[in-house]
Image 1 (cartoon, rainbow, N blue to C red):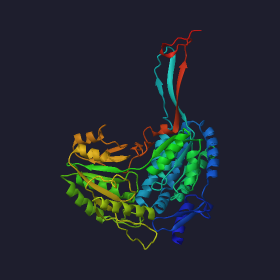
Image 2 (image 1 turned 30 degrees about the horizontal axis):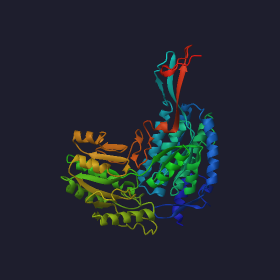
Image 3 (image 1 turned 90 degrees about the vertical axis):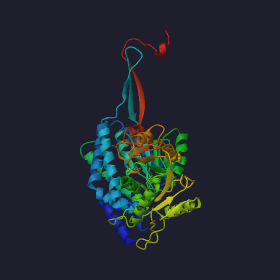
Image 4 (image 1 turned 30 degrees about the vertical axis):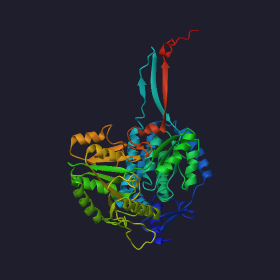
Length: 509
């Protein structure tokens, strides 16, 4: 056990208001991918704990749904204020536990602040419709009501932001939340819950009423998530993770007629056209492919370059790739931190071996020793020139691997872009308006996110986030994603003294 790692984590947790008993004496080991050290021993929940927590959450929902939405928004505003006050400490904990470079840790907390701001405004705009009725003296309208308990299952790569995307909207929509975070990032979850609890105390201190158990945290292993998925009192399960996980979660929720919001794998491509600004494209590709050590669902996995600029682009990418500094993500100048664990590193090596077997030429990808830490898994970013979009290229490997392909016509490039099972994010770099519009058209990219002259990674809060095909079809964050967390009711009001039936039906008594 690394005393320095423990000390750093415990100092941050204490600063963030987490009691020591929450991160000591448990059976669930918290680990930093930076050096492989143990950073805490967290108490693991059981399926029985899930059953009890969902019961409390349902009771909280029954009270919270009657609180006016702008009042609910005030609680989220106070939570955002807590995040602003403690941004540096929470960001440092994200870096320690998820291995992100410091600016990305800060960016993740900023995403939480941004979604709180969005949700506060949304709390005064949960609007329905007024609909013209065919019957005289009648009015039709549509209302949106709170849904119920929302179960959130989040992944290690965005250990707190994804919860915030869901929780901020769910809370203003009148729901309660039960959270099962990744077992790889339990400490950031404890800190986030502590900050929410502080906001709830501030809310009550200002004279507002709010039930206990509006937001509950259940650290634990897979059986905890399974119990949450299977509980019929959980109206919506929002699950972020692999396609394999989604294949398990989706049918189980559907079997009990619950709602599911799935954010799963991505295999994102950038098309680089002949007219592209290559300086701009290279910068967008590098961050997309190698930021977060390739461990984002929106990571750029493929570049599809026009034959006329392919070699020049490849040379530029290789020079830039080789210059990227790999190391402790807290060190200034480092842009690529560690993979989350040995399993991730081994998966990267297996993918590179498959790429070679399938005709690829690999640059980079070897293990990088950092600080002499045996259980820290750093890897040089890899650039792989492929002769075709082979089996390994169509598979998402959560690592800093970029496959480089070539094309002759835009139709061919779009076919390659769409020719994978996933459909999350996509982009084209071009200065040709026709190409840009063709890429964005119905016959263009089939992804949930399609960009022009910007990379695949780094979405803003204001737009709905999610994708198609094996990405799961869910939408979180901005736009009208809030509708996932509410139920729709269509109402007809008769203010006349007659009772005409729709469609001209007669039923005279």
